[in-house]
Image (cartoon, rainbow, N blue to C red; front, side, top):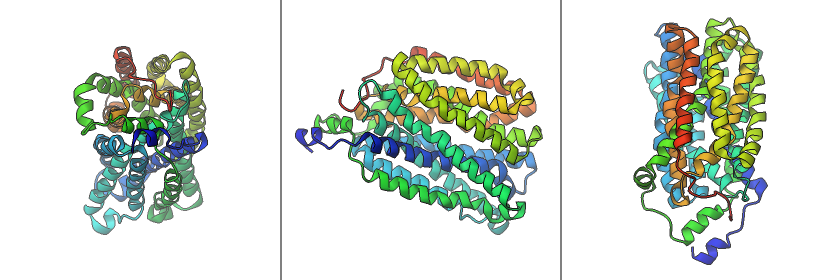
Length: 428
């Protein structure tokens, strides 16, 4: 592609860009949430039945954590091709990796049929989910922000983030419908498989939309100006180390609060607070509505007051919520969920634009994805496991202290982050 071809590449329409970025992360988070829900409700009984209840839950959470270990590998792999070949093709490959892994989980035989091979195969599929997610999020954010008009980077960048509450709402609603419309025996025999297999429909829609896209203007310019680097991850690790570290810890509290409000909260509420799984899934779905409302509100604020200001405000709120976490959870589950999900929405809105602005176009896919997914390792992979251990050993108050400590680290990272490399927009 020469300079003229690159600069005259047809622009994607805003509606196509935003829907393509939204549908991909909706599928991504739908896949992850059905796994997270099954990790609490299904897998301890069907894939780890030889252990006692507490040990089975912890083993199930360990497989949940595997995807977060695979995510940085996916970031490096898909980020390499995203920065070398292009955003479009890489996004298609990431979506296929994620989608196929999820569908296969729905087809796996259980421990009762093949013994210890069952949890091994489950772990392999979970790794596949992690690899796909490692490449999906960064590409979706860049698809949005690199096509954004000047001054609307946070607004465009929040559309991939909206995939989180939408995916959660669909996944939780489907599990809730299944558990309310079939017996426990039917649910554990075949009902739990339905969400995993049904995700194939969403994948087809996502692929159709993404194959219709053209390349982003920012990447087209980078190609025309020969700005690409041979090994993007090496460039990120050696020349953008500060940005990588700052981005990782800036996103830390976002991951911790999200998984304490979803996976851990569902597990603790149904095992220790006398909620039925159906009643608490309804509580979570109400909370997710507020999650979805506050994502665009925080993006609107970020475009007017700055991404860094909005992220710092969200981090202060996360710290305060950590102090109130235990008493709220123990005494008013609905208020706890609504307040927590409002805070999650505020921190989710500007996150994509914050991380994208830390890296130049030539390594932006790799850098932003790696920072996001390294934060996933430190902030999410162990969150359900560590929170369960803290709550059982020291009490629920210490889960809140854990969240507040994560907020302190994120605040320090935001204060010490390097200046944004450039505005991330389609033409400016």
